[in-house]
Image (tube, rainbow, N blue to C red; front, side, top):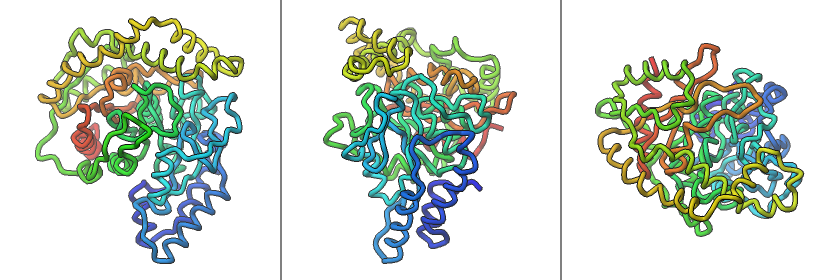
Length: 435
């Protein structure tokens, strides 16, 4: 039995139609059924999950005020610190690591009343090396990365929602491959304090849910400033309500191929041409200034990761994958001028991109080159790289399918800080369907 969505589960517990203990038991039953095949969880303690749920039920029975997610189980990617679970960052180098404090997103979830069901699998250091998780639609295929466990757990009906992160394509790509909603808000919307730091410029907390409304609800709860994260932005009150507002007229969409189009698979190209035509999305080219944006994103990511993981590389490179070592070594070789150019080039692209959102409500583009490839890879993140580099909000919707039955994600991108408008468009398209 698949557990209900985030808002539905919260309402059922709040109204007394369900208990937190009963809801957690449903999740655990689903996990028992599918986890041997899917392997979405890095750390799962059934007894601890039930103790949290029983405490939530006692709290409610005592008449105490309830948080918006009271008693609702949520999964958390294993790059966020937790005091009651190990945090191993998908790496043998951190096996058994026990943080002394919760990450801010975990603290916020607990304050909202959520039950932290467990830690979902991350790829090694949230990079490309595949981990044990498999795609719930076909275990021979990848769930994507790096938030592989979060996407797979939600897609398999094990949990109503899960928290992930994106430094390249690590929310949008796995959500697209697994057929769930993946939402990467504007950079800095959710504090990253207590999360593994890959790149301050790129790292973004994101969520996986089964609906746009649930994604908006979860991000609204997690959003807010934090003194230890200099990029964290003020909270976004009313985001969940804004997301489900009825649009007075169909949104204006711009169909953008982006510099990643050279990787697109024929099936995806055909599907998006048809979808853009059906939606009246005008094909809109990006300027030549965007041609090297994906490569510049790669420079920032390599240098920042090489710097932030320098101690790990020096003390334990024999426990790191060859792919991660190659990235860190490449980052060490980049000149200061090349890195500075990659960081500063974003300002030019911001100026060129902003007018586009005066003419459209959202950009329509694929979430990935095609459906999920085999498990030997986590897939190509190129269709996400530009938007992560620019810090714009992006969301993927499970509206299309490939010929083999696997999901094809439909990505929508909004202007920086204009998350509410993006979510309204996404909700409109989700309700309408791809037809």
